[in-house]
Image 1: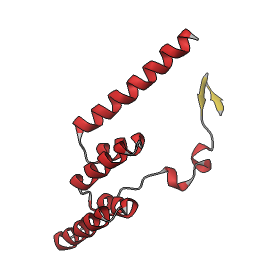
Image 2: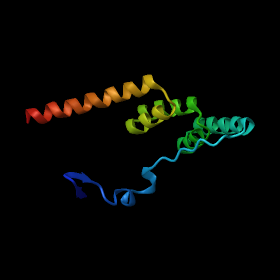
Image 3: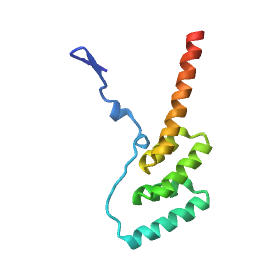
Length: 117
């Protein structure tokens, strides 16, 4: 961290983060016939339980329904941040707000517990 006029700013943080920390989302236009084929393949992979590969496809073609299904799955598995990311990208405001509210409730509980101790 480096001080700059009284403010602290990170230095080299991005260089130290693993590449897997970042989500690359491209919005290139995929021809409709290719997009339909990719969506079908993503749905098939999802049904087979190959969620990581299905996620990559759904992200590539920005398939909102698939992203929401993945978010629901991740939420059921306790992968709250992954669920939030899927809902954010879908976008599904209702589910996103529900996850944020759950996370806020957890933080509030922690703060109350910390204050009691």
